[in-house]
Image (cartoon, rainbow, N blue to C red; front, side, top):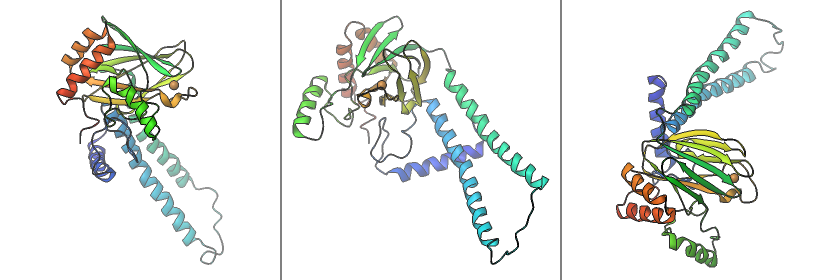
Length: 308
Ligand SMILES: [Cu+2]
């Protein structure tokens, strides 16, 4: 969406960031220790957000350097010993025009792509194929597929007792084991949930976000998603996942005591896998999730979180 020069700069910078960040860093759809850049983008909207972030950065850097240079020059050149009698200019039309038009132009360079980005976030590229209603509760999520299949389930954190102590781990393991989620790479502490949202890769998914008690927020960093869920209102957003995998997000609106313990997870799978899951999930979502997880793990797919 930006000009080729910016694009090239972005590519170079992204490569630089990627190599600087960590040589061991793999594609991960969850936060990593010492992470200082975004989670890798897994939707066109997140790619656009990242591009805009880099564009903004490249506008900020020269301005900062220019202002710092100017300050340093003024401090040196007009110090009292070198310039005992200060100039008393109070008005200069040329300077006024330059320092008014300059910032206006710079802001225009930011505003145009910013509005483009904003527009793209509210306009799905095609009619959504899946619609999911997400309801935030204190302190878990409820999901409802609003298509032909009647699927509804709740998503809760598992293994909350894992506090570093052996007893905590044993308690967490007892909760994780029946779900087949002992692998902490794939099902990380404080992010692993019992029931993931399942969606097909490459398809536009509409999310209707609301809440049952106080304000919550449905956020998924890898998709550039963040939408408030407000009681009595429905906010609409969408995403289009570009890569199969397991993606983690968290409630992002302070909603009470256990705000930090209501993550959400989205499993992006192939269209075929999604259809199989959908057929089963209407009757028994737990069994459908179990079958999907087992099939994906046996096929060694959907392990982006763990892939090196
Ligand atoms: Cu919340």
